[in-house]
Length: 204
View 1 (cartoon, rainbow, N blue to C red):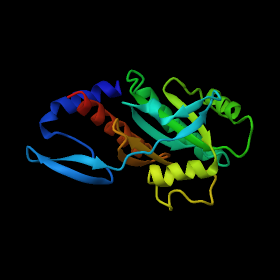
View 2 (view 1 turned 60 degrees about the horizontal axis):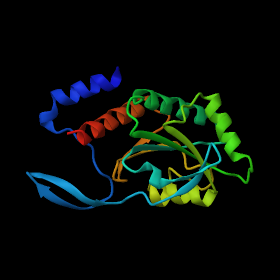
View 3 (view 1 turned 90 degrees about the vertical axis):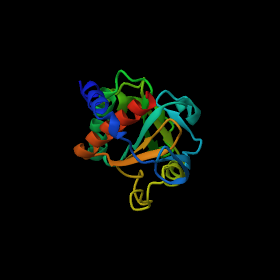
């Protein structure tokens, strides 16, 4: 019901051209009195292992809206909260295959890491058709978090097992469109609304 209500809202107020910012833009042009982003930071290519033991490459996300987050193996209470909120997102966009969720975790030299991810997915009843669980080395996960997703050092402390609870919204061009606290229900409500804005704008 939520997607329909939000689309009706956006259509009713379409004359206001509701939009969300593009983070880390480096250039823009003025078009019909509005600035259009022509260049911005893009998420760099990456490769990780998924819950099936297969290699997952970023090219698989072409023309997709993506929400990224991190699993915290040593902090199951927080991971559970984040997963619960991400499930709300997945359920809200069950009819929109272009919306994908990625959860990253650190492979602590565990040779059955894919089995661990698969068990996690089964435990929380995650639909892996649109939500992929990924694992990589500590260095690769932190590189993506800090250099790719541009999560601040405060949000991604090197003393923790994962870069924290921050969720990131990425558009179809690979640009960052928002940051959200993954355990805050109000923040997830905002994230859902802003995904709807992207979907609406892509369709118009």
